[in-house]
Amino acid sequence: MVKKNTCIFISGQGSNLKNLIARSRDSSFPIKISLVISNNKEAFGLNYAKKFQIPYILINTKIKNYENKVIFYLKKYKISFICLAGYMKIISNKLIKSYQGKIINIHPSLLPKFKGLNTFSRMLKNKEKKGGCTVHYVSKKLDSGNTIVQKKFTINSKDDEKILKKKTQKLEYLAFPEAIIKIFRKN
Ligand code: GRF
Image (cartoon, helix red, strand yellow):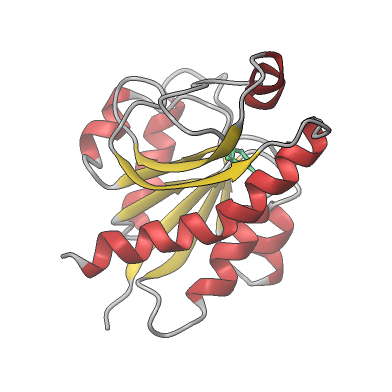
């Protein structure tokens, strides 16, 4: 099987990156992580790139036309698939256009509910009964592309934000690889 050269975008902890690196070491997993891009030089997740000797690029999103640098490196590493894994910036229409249908994101809620930031506090405030995560295609509108995989859990009355995050991430580590397999198995 020829694995898809994939770039993972991160901004922080990188636990989904870590999980995808582990999964991608399996020869039957459809992607190879060939590049990591971070907009945050302090992102803990960069340690995983270093540890597993995956090339990584730091970008400064304050610089005008910074996405030209992104596109340059995506081409250089022959990237054909992109996963946003805790990437806290909105990516430009130019990038979405050049990778139409080839960018996916993981979001810590049951989309279309709770798009955007601070999902857990809003869920608690709203007295939601279910939480979860959604892996979806990236489109021009924030957190609105088609869903690939969604996983749910039950919220207990004592759950706080920390517990919601823990429960969500446990599901994310299943949902992200599952979505990737689903995408490439059908092609
Ligand atoms: C995840 O919960 C994801 O849903 C959200 O950002 C978080 C990233 O976590 N988009 P990590 O950096 O992969 O640990």
